[in-house]
Image (cartoon, rainbow, N blue to C red; front, side, top):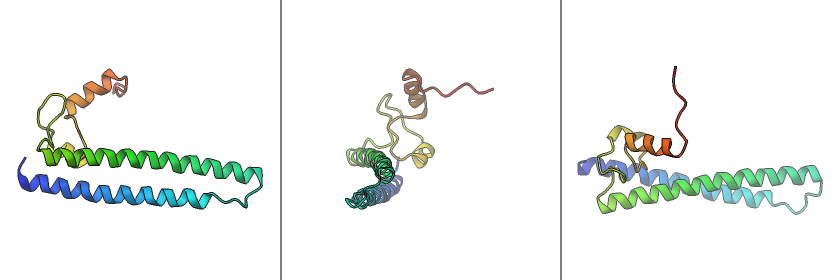
Length: 124
């Protein structure tokens, strides 16, 4: 992959990192807002707990995305971005455009999903 394309993906990943980091900050602010000590009704307390749990899980997802982006940026720095970590073949630029954090080429990804029981159902 040429330097210009790598720089394109670096910029794309950096923007995604900013966006996901902002989501984490927003989620943290939401959890703090949900912590209202004045609520005494059991239904309101239950609803508040459910909202906190949802917000917490969303934050976990965002944190995982941040970690994936950090790893992709590290691969760019190391010069291994766009190379499948399983087989060493190039990951298609089309796949990287769709998922710039991809660590595997499409073939290896399907194999890994099949090994883990995440194989998509057969089509008709």
